[in-house]
Length: 333
Image 1: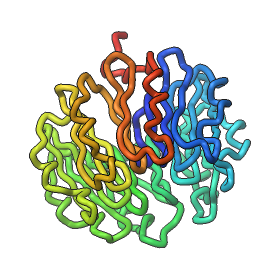
Image 2: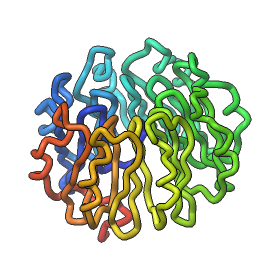
Image 3: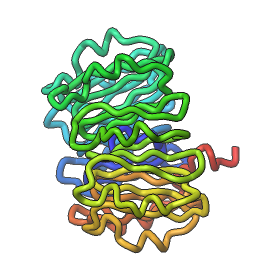
Image 4: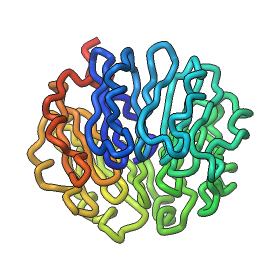
């Protein structure tokens, strides 16, 4: 859910943001905290979008960022206007982290759990950042990691300090997962089965994604493995039947897999999060999950949404959106 690497679509708890091919953006869903404040319509030349719980951040092609939405925990603190040379941005629940071209990071927003602890200002040689709800992880160019923020549930447990040859990191609410160059994974953080040792047996992993309390690994043969909390069927064995998977993403208690034929499959809690309507979608090329809803990008630049709609997460207004920017893997240039 957090730290989604997609740069075309991103989902918060109750809202979604898409990047259009002309560099503009569109937002739909809950607007109680200004998540869809019309100010976003004035922002242009965007190259990446990211969502926290109820705020959003966009990266502009000149290396600056702009933020809108909830600001009760300083999520949109104007300090972010001073940052330049940014190449990646990710969001936690109420904070955001920017990776700069010189390998340093900047953080703004809620600091109650040390999410923006000044220690991050001393970090260099970073190549990727990821955020959990109240913690952040940075991957260094030498394949090691560092973590800062809330450690109440061992999110920043020192176990990660022994890891080397890491090539990707992902975060759930209170846990993190590292993917190694040899195709194995390791997990640390909250022990509600999120770090069930079963994941130690997985090999040939090529992508990882984290939900609230579970994780999913995509293997090189197109199958997937899931571990963690299963109270709401987040790890329902049905996922073991999926083949030809090319992308996975997770919401709080559900997951979505994109298949090579452009269809999607969903499993987990089913208060509309896995509404069978998603089985009718074709020509999907990218997926993203919010807390309790999901969005699919189609090859014709339109989007489809399903899941919880209590806060307009799937307001039909999204059906009017066209020319969404396609991921580079399917770009014609």
